[in-house]
Length: 253
Image (cartoon, rainbow, N blue to C red; front, side, top):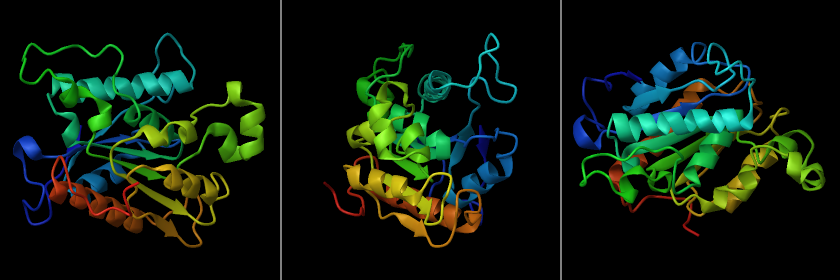
């Protein structure tokens, strides 16, 4: 878990009970070591704590020699969530979920669920309530270059229908269940996860934040400064609105 001071030593987020924490889920062919510079910059710009975790089967994260899998990614983000809400006693309303590329799979899956498997209950009756631990009550969700699903990102909609039982990270079936504000940033020239994935998911959001479509950029050349500024603006909007809003969204549905 990494934290950086806000510009000028203080700022909008501040500390204490209302400080926000971001769970960052990285993309494919990456690990948390490669992402540390971005995590530090994200913490600084958004004036938040950031928890970056590793997927089972990636890098040095091995459980009984498991290979990378959808279930492994979901188990990993569930563990990150349990750590924050149980061990750190950070309520769901103070957590923002941020996923990039394949990391949007576990991010959307978590944000669309009311419960997390294996969540230990707290001895503190005042803290131990559904609102405090349910991912549906996360403050917000940020998706960078998101996939509609594994198959749709690579082959398009037709293959995902024919091969539905084998498709993974079916975000298009889950994103409509997310009750938190959702922000999406995507490059218009993305050839790995085509821009249409981001636009389709945005259209299904219940509470969409104004998206950022970055002209002429692909999957791996997204300008970091623009992404960080967008993330910072989204988090500041969430912070100003408080746990219950109202928020300045693209239009509630």
